[in-house]
Length: 83
Image (cartoon, rainbow, N blue to C red; front, side, top):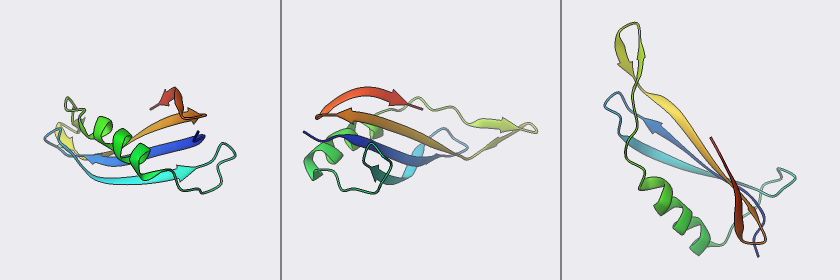
């Protein structure tokens, strides 16, 4: 019965590999909150399982960048996935 925004921020390196994950948790009014550990772990596993990231090419050089994936939850159900 959790509602809010669960965001995973991570770095995609110049080789297209993701790492350095961070979690940001907010209620639907964007106030900080703590989600259930089981839910957080489940969504983290899904996010971490995404593998086909492309490096950003800037001035002919591959670069690292931050990526954000936000799961919008309402009563424990994912109702939207935001980039």
